Length: 257
Image (cartoon, rainbow, N blue to C red; front, side, top):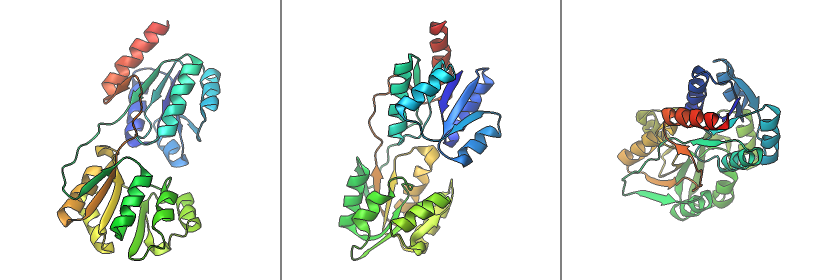
């Protein structure tokens, strides 16, 4: 049995490749929507976040032989828990992570954390559009809501819990864009124009995360951009393509027999 940390579109495709290669597997995801997408292609799913201890127990309970971590590049806690659980259970850990991107844009500021991004946005002011998701929204609302000459707009997935979080943090309804991508550059440009965006905040999620389109749209309109770089984690075995993961998985399982 292979345990796959999934939840993104490329993780779903990797899980399908592992299944097609003949390996029994079970995937873990955070949302019911991600679970349904995997179940539709015949993959067993466990929904909900797992601590390192819970994941260790899960690995032992399901007789997992290897952990394939294909979680989002910014799912730092999930990856650390997976590495710890794999080590504790004595099974191989294999990391898949989409390619990182480098952008050349004179109005692009690269920062290392959400806190640093929020502080930089507070200095720049204006109409600020967040495309960083809901998980870290509080960091930005605490720094930016109530500041003169700042309008904070949050673009995020159209989930009830996201909208409830916005309400609890005091983000006005008119400043919430609940929508699911991927989006084209033209769509992003239209959205920036509609809201009069002067600053866009995003994170380096890779091409699959449509970051290219967001930044290209901002560049064409001359909009300043703050880019949050990926967390630096020593994964050990890390691969940027599915074939590398499959080869590593085969090698790892052979060494266990």
